[in-house]
Length: 278
Ligand SMILES: N[C@@H](CCC(=O)N[C@@H](CS)C(=O)NCC(=O)O)C(=O)O
Image (cartoon, rainbow, N blue to C red; front, side, top):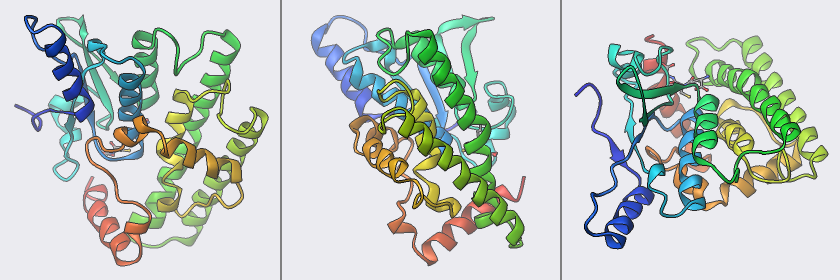
């Protein structure tokens, strides 16, 4: 067994229990979706979507998933077995056993690509995705913007602000300022769309893809003081049941309040131990 044993979320456990009550003679639901993840911005994006889909399509057994919490401290994400699932050696990654490619379940890597796979295959009513070609194109623009801009810039801000062995003020300032600038672009995008959501006046994978990062602005030392619409967008998303369930997979990250002072130092040291080892 190359990885930790897989686990199922409470929502999937209740889906399995429900299906055995409804048809006691049939085989219990066996998840076909396997998520490899960790409690990080990119990991949460996908568990949020899976939990939102389970709530939006109650009883739909194709959406049952299990997950494996990949150990960064032992560099499990760089192991030979994991590289077959994600050649980039990072989480999240997904295996969909409902489709076999050369005899094994289809693997998907890169968080946004996983989300697109899931909505295109399982969100038949386009609850979190779009029918209209213009809205779809707009959604892809924002997804690429987050994937190419916010994720990498905020990731570098985290690195220089929290983990770098020497504090380099220029590096910290550059990435924090760029993250803040990208937040302003999102603020303008929210305003243009009516203030609530990034695309099409509904909560979609565009928002989920961005939320993983933006909700953890404080860890990067970025700010949302200049972006009031973005600040209330974070609160609106945080209040959703599916989001709350999603951020408990594989475990809840610490909140801003829990990370004051010494706790932040301790967390940064713990993460730096494996980040700087690579
Ligand atoms: N562009 C990738 C980024 C994935 C990524 O950087 N994942 C981080 C966690 S948020 C990771 O696995 N880090 C482990 C490592 O760097 O070895 C995506 O969106 O999936």
